[in-house]
Image 1 (cartoon, rainbow, N blue to C red):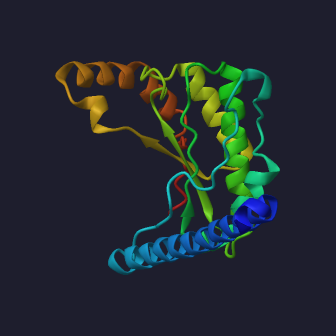
Image 2 (cartoon, rainbow, N blue to C red):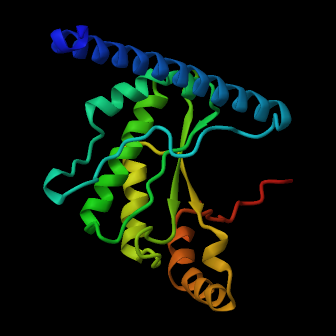
Length: 217
């Protein structure tokens, strides 16, 4: 009878209680998640002290998603605030590993925007760590939506975008799925010889050997 007489008050009370429960659950989940991630890093460092450890794809950015009219190169202020809240993760890492896997449905210029935005955010976060952590950027050699090899121009543009926004290096990633048949292996070998290899060779330091006069007596 009481609920029938005061339905609005009861609804308000139930809503407030549900909100409180959700807030408490969120806090407990985040605290447990933080402990798990921090302890995992500590254990990894203990087991492999000579390795450099960090979490793949952090910091998140979510740029260049959604409809073309709403895509933005930069990470949103909300996402940046979220990344600021987990500085403990980056402080506990040895290296920061953003991910810039490309999608073929994006235009070439949009792919560059995706890379610049994500690397820029990773560098922003890295600059807040002491000592400053290096940024190594993950890039897959195929488009994630079509599993076709990246073009030569995409490689050149991607490497330039990473360098211009401060990435300290690149990690090329693939999976066993890419090479689980003879045909795939043959195809990748041809791609490595014709496209990927020549592009990456331009990154290697070049040494010039000069004739040094003999000054011995």
